[in-house]
Image (cartoon, rainbow, N blue to C red; front, top):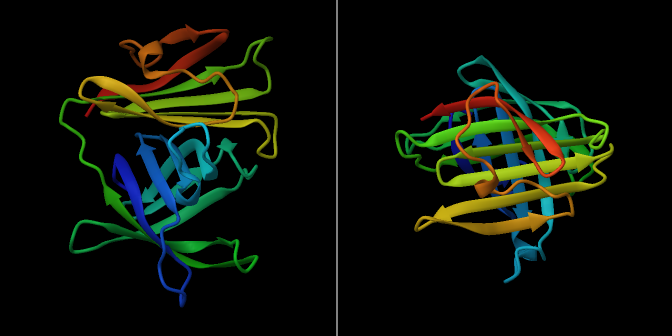
Amino acid sequence: MSKLVATRISLQFPPSPPTEPTDTLVLTFRSHYIDLRVLRSSLSSSPSQIAVDMGFAGTVSHNAPNHSKWEHVVDSNGSDEIDEGIFTLLPNGDEVEGGTTYNPDTGREEEYKEVWRQIPVEKGAPAYFLESVDTAKTAGTKIFVGRIGLYFQAMGQTGSGGRGYSAKRWQLESGKWRLVYEIGGIDLPRPHDIGEVQEGDYLRVGVVSYLVREAYTI
């Protein structure tokens, strides 16, 4: 998927009709990504009272312009598999992703189709991706933090198997950051914890040190 900031329009396991049970936002950097999918059925007035359908983050690679692979380093379901998808551009600019994945309704691996739509990003907008660095105090916890323009997501996990999963999504509105969703109890960075950064920098937020893996302007 070539889109920097994207939302999913629909998920389909043919021949069943397409649906969209989630509010999904994916931040895709040059070689990393953060993908948070929140169940619409759990949405309430409180950002902490929501349920995640899936959330994962890690590295992304592109074997061809329309073929992508995603490694799951942090995963709410505990998966460490590498996902693959083939993309086809639609006339309206949306992209259809196709491949095979687990269908929770049938318990089987099946062919799927996902329709993705780009969210516009202003030229010159900041983009950065940070990864936590293991120390004696934080061993066993992995956190990823990313921002592209108006959108900021942080995601972390303690242990394996999806245990201790946490995530946050923030959105910049009228010059102020608004917390959209909050899941789990890990103390994840907030947008105002991250100042101007350069690739290769190290910074500390609380007891956690972070390496700036990517930093650039759109």
